[in-house]
Structure formats: C-alpha cells, structure tokens
Image 1 (cartoon, rainbow, N blue to C red):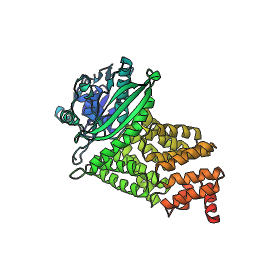
Image 2: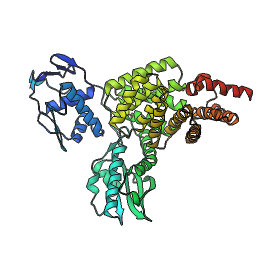
Image 3: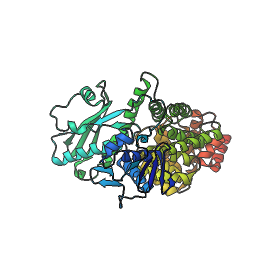
Image 4: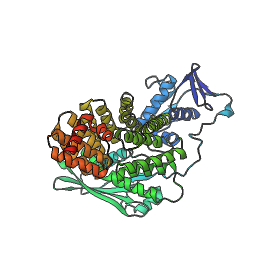
Length: 510
C-alpha cells in the first residue's frame, strides 16, 4: 500500500482511493501514476514515459498529455495547482508528493499483463533528413518541415515505431547505406530523399527502402510552388502520405506473412489490418481478418488494438449485411468494443475503431464523444474523421457528415478503404440533394475497388435520383455480379427501403 496526502494506492488490487473513496481510473493511467510514484522527484521526458509506460510504442504528445491530465484529475490535482505532478516546461514531468509504503517490501509495480510473453516484432522506420540540392536557407527550412510532419503523421500507423535517431545523420558528408543504418539502429524501413529547385518549383524526391535487403520498395516525386514556400506544407505532406502509406503497409504485411515461427498477437493484428487495407472490405476479407483478430486477442488479452479492430469489422459487417448471424455478430462486436475501452482509453486508433463500431451498431450518442476524443488525441487520424462523418450520417446531421467524411478522405492513404468512405460521402451528398457531387463521389468510390458491392448500390441509388434508371440498373447488376446473393436487407440498410424498393422494381421491369 502506498500513501501520500489523502491518497492511497493498493498496487496489488490495482485500486486508487482518495479520502477513502475508490476512484475509477483506466489501466494505463494507473500504470503511469505508479511509475511516477516509484521514482519521486525524478524528471521524466515524454520519450522516457513512452518507454516506461507505453512499452516503447510511439504515441502522440497529446496522448501523453491526456494521460497526465487524467492522473491529475484522479488525484484531485490540476495543471494550475500542480500539487503532485509538476510540469517542467520543455523538459518533462515529475512526481513531487511525499510517499510512504506499508509495508515497504510489498511495493512492486504490477506488470502490464500476466499472459505468456510473445515475441515482439513491431515494424520500425527512420525518416532521414532530406538533402537540399542547390537549395537556399528557405528551402532547407521547408525540407526540415516536411520531415518533421512526416514523422509525426506516420505515428498514426498502428504499431509502427518511428526512430528518434534521424538527427544523428543530418550533418554527415557521406550517408551510410541502408544496411549500415539498420546495423546501427535496428530499423526495418528507411525513408530518404532530396529537395531541389526547378523552374520556380520545389521538387521533392522520396523513396522507401527495405533496410534489411537494401532494395527500394517505392519512390515518388512531388512538387510544391516556390511562391508558397513560407506557407503551409500540408498539401505536399498529404500528397506524399497518400502514396507512401499503402506501400509501407504492403511491405509490413508481406514481412509479417513471411515471418518464421508462431505469430505474435501484434503480427496477427498487422496481418488482419494488411488484408483489409490491401485486399479491400469484402465478405471473405472480413471473415479472414476477424479470425486473425480473435487469435490476436487470445494470444495477448491486454492488447487493446485487437478487440478494437475486431469490433469495427463485426459492427460494419452487421450494419451492411456482410456477415451472417446478425444478432450474434452484434453481441460479439459490443463485447469486443467494451473490452478495448477497458484496456485503453487514451489511444486515438483504439478510440477511432471503437467509436466507429458503436455508431455502426446504432449507438450513435455514445460513439460521438469517443470519436471526437480520438481526433483530439490525433488530428491526423483519417479513420476517426471518416468514422465521425459516418456517425453523423446515421444521426441525419448531413452537413457535419459531409464535412468530416470529406476531411477523412482528404488525409487518408490511397487504399481500398476509400471505396467505403467515398460511398458514404456520396450517400450523405445525395441525402443533402447535392446530386452532381454525389454522382462524382459514387463513381470515384466504384473506381477505387472493383470488388465492393456497397459503392455500386449507392451509385445506383444516386443515378436513380438523377433520373437515369437504365444506367442505375446497369450499376446494380454490377453489384449483383460481385455479390450474387445480395439481399433486400443489405440494399435497404445502405440506401433506405424506399430507394431499395424502386431499384428492385426496375429489375423486375427489365
């Protein structure tokens, strides 16, 4: 038992009491508090807290700050008072309470989990400084901004570790090879490139390299107007990430699939995530991914991403009829969502998955604050933006639905998920009577995945509203090509019973 002021912490029972009254705290918040108390008057940087409490997993500054805020709230402290947790600006945080132990020998930090320790094979990446070829000081500053933004936003890829050692290579005359950097840092992938000025345009060349083999996995060239060099780099960053992320996810997926030995919980999660990102959201991929995520959750019951992603897959499958046994699927989705929230409430990815799942299950009022929190923790979380737009669509808040879905699509990687999100955006635009924009989005959604029937059902509905019944029938037939057993429930759950009935009437006439 640990005591200070009016606070008691029972480390064996995982309980915190203030003035004798139990205070509910999330497991991660409790772990952070215990870590602080174990080392009173010791200054910890954010990176040191990530290593100690998050197991070295890279999380956003907002996640760390939010967790510290929750610790303070549990103790009756605040950022203004700083009675127990002191902030040292620019350096970190320390615990300044006077702690007693009873008995002293009983103090042992509770392990994060008691499950069998599995091998850890989380992918890692280093973003090297961009070389400036015949560049000015302004271009050098621009290049540094591109690298910093890439490092920050790439942390949205679950389990990807971004190396903090890139600065060590900033001023080298001769850059080591990818394999040499791997030997020095242990990273799996390397992102490098250069920036040059050509015809009043900044040209950025970037390539992704497998550090183990030295092979180039992907390369891209991007432009930015020299006239806007002092402005935002958001546009070029989004352009780079939209092309880079799918290639990086593809590399991680193939690496996991070819790894030797029994897969760890994290490898199973990465495989499931890769299947959906690379192969699309279909009945077979849903079933395959769900099976992998169930195995992942069994392998490591404390790993929150597995039940969170499982809840999303099951809930969306339930909403659009992609999975059978609807009531059983709904019950499992809710159970998985609740389990994920018990394990982790400060991770943007987990909250984005769970919030989307709850919305798809019809629990919109509960999902909205969860999804807003996910975006607050990580504004680059494209999935959370799109999920929030989908929740607003279910809630019939069409303008908000359009705004958030469009934002999610704009900042997302160019992979098969855009077919689903684009179909939802088209649906929102159609319901808002913006038929021209709805038609454009529906056509684009179909273009992005040849195996998704959802986008084709929405496209057919938009065409019907545009008074193009023959084209609507052709598109609907394409949906039946993809899913011959497409049912009335599946159609109506997407576009409404009224439009579904009209489409089926066309089929009867033809």
